Amino acid sequence: MKVALDTNVLAYAEGTNGTTMRDNALDLIQRLPAGDVVLPVQTLGELFNVLVRKAKRRPARAQTAVLSWRDAYPIADTSAAVMVNATDLATRHNLTIWDSVVLAAAAEADCRLLLSEDLQEGFTWRGVTVANPFGPALHPLLTALLARPQKQ
Image 1: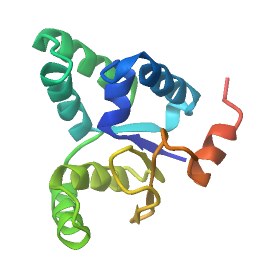
Image 2 (image 1 turned 180 degrees about the horizontal axis):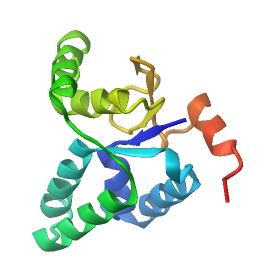
Image 3 (image 1 turned 135 degrees about the horizontal axis):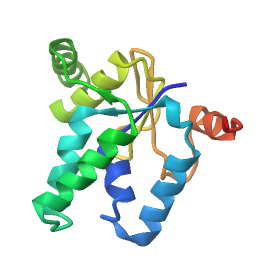
Image 4 (image 1 turned 120 degrees about the horizontal axis):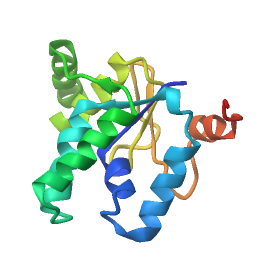
């Protein structure tokens, strides 16, 4: 099952919301099947912005983090089709255009889950379900994914 990570998961893993959230995000990421994780390219741009503006990192250090994430996982590009689908999502479901781009890229990459704290838990579009990995109860699809034995 392919999974896309939203910006907040990456930002938390970078320590932008304290050590507890960093540890939770890193634990989550380590438990996901590495070959099934996808990063929408939009999340890398947003991560850079969060690291520079919120975390007050120097741009070169933020860039290093972005490149590290890019090297770790396959990237889902923002194609013309993704952008058109994102405008449809934003129009029909009252999402921001940038959240819509992330969700549309996840769908284009054939992801089943988008892990995000920002979008509505359980919202499903084109087969992609939003799951909050930091909520009080995990979505059943995420629970099932995390329960799978890791491939060695």
